[in-house]
Length: 350
Image (tube, rainbow, N blue to C red; front, side, top):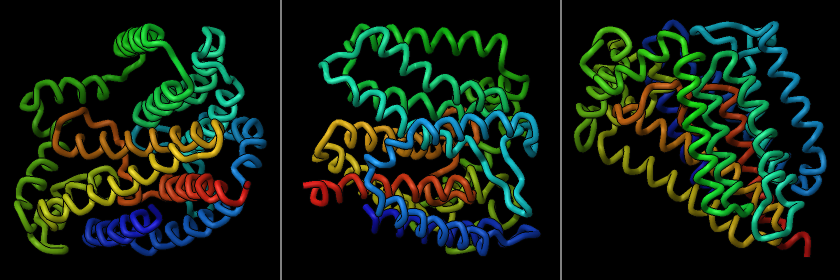
């Protein structure tokens, strides 16, 4: 799992360098700094017993909520969303750390219940824990970031124990909330993205431009790709957000099907090893914690790779270890350290 994470991070550095080589700023040095700091944090959290970490779940969750409120008041706005807090020349995205804190608190909360199925009040408490940061992120507005709390809740709920009919009721309620959000909460440009997804040719130079250029990049890579830093869509600046949300399209154009298959293979190795760690965890705390973190990671991979080929609407969800981004990179390494720490404690806690 660690080897897969490191390999993906190296591929990510190469892709960020290629994607930003024609930009005024080469983002490679910054991403290298984030990866280096991420590895340090991985070692730190790995050295801490996850039971100790879960003991600080409430303070961590409270701090995450405070930062989400702060970003609404004094956050940095970019791309129509107030999602970052500026610290000198660096920007911190509290929503990424909120997902991590929520996963820890959710594991602690659900691990306290030992029965086979959770009761209605217990599920309501879990929904409240997830909905609070989710709504704060949605208000920024960052609907892509808010959506990442849904797989976290679903994964931990399924493992925590829920009857099928209860799960179906919750799914129906989520669809109802989505319908209400479409009517009252979504902005015009967000609705347009969904409409463009349903009707790809309706706005090829507007809301559909990113996905259209991304599909051209992916298709033009063919089997072996055009070569490193030889892609026309990225190097000639046709593809927007190529070092962040659409870095996978750059990978496909330059390395082709073989490169894409290799990167997806590394993600499979990461997730399968994470699943093995969850299954052989010594206690319910570790199982729920690993499942929650893996659910977020897996959904990021599935949604981003589907987004770059136009299978789902564009919501600005980055790709773990490959996309440029400080907060997102740090959270990926921290989550990896926590998962590896859960596995290590099978021996240390005997």
